[in-house]
Length: 336
Image 1 (tube, rainbow, N blue to C red):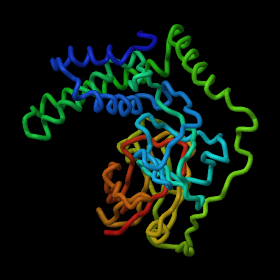
Image 2 (cartoon, rainbow, N blue to C red):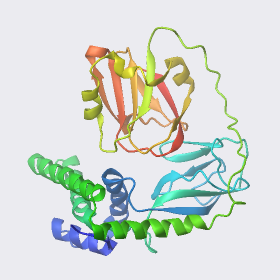
Image 3 (cartoon, rainbow, N blue to C red):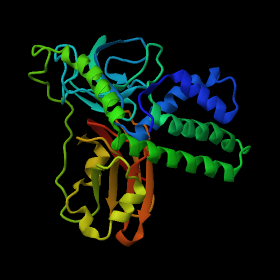
């Protein structure tokens, strides 16, 4: 079992050895993004740290006075912060790409605190050694998928690369959840480092009273019968749409799921998520492909979800391709 941390340069060298691409300079921004995506798939609870009181100004391309563009290393908002300048629970909601403020204020700057993937001083992600092979497999797969997109790749080879990534990903997850003694020491050091950032807060910095969200949506009375949109979050980070489909054996599966009418979701509905995992929607009963999903900025995010129609239950099932963390997120459903 491998233990400890690896440098970004070590990863680049491993990708070069695997792919034969000797000059990855033009690909480095993409590789950094791919590392974050792969680490989120392997273990979203991995090497995190807290970034406190980060300042964004209007005009710097990340803040427009009412919404913040999520940084590449973003995992989740820390719900303890400075009310005077920062974000308090209930004063914002999340879309796939932005944090949207809803306290009615127009700002020239914003100060906020969030949990992030660890990066070195050059903006490169910090990597667990036992994730190296999985990351190389994922990056190789994505680089080769570009050839498939322009019809220059080999379908059989693409399937092999995909299988290699899936196998290496599972191996890395296993090592994360069943670490050896040396690796436990490393995890302790990582958590100790992250906690040092948090200990800089004093009781006076902590949020004592938060603004309520000023966006209110008139919710019509729920129909007793008819189509409903059910929603929930998966607690097992490894589960995908295949596992959800397999777990639906009868209509009682939906009995403990929260739901709202299509009329409410057409106006927009904010959902609170309290864990890290993929999120699910089920429209029941419904016809095939009769709904699309948009976020608070009216972006169509339907493609961010895997979708399957279950004819036995007259249900359209949506399961997000990515994990979502502790957050309040605004969704709209639009009937086609």
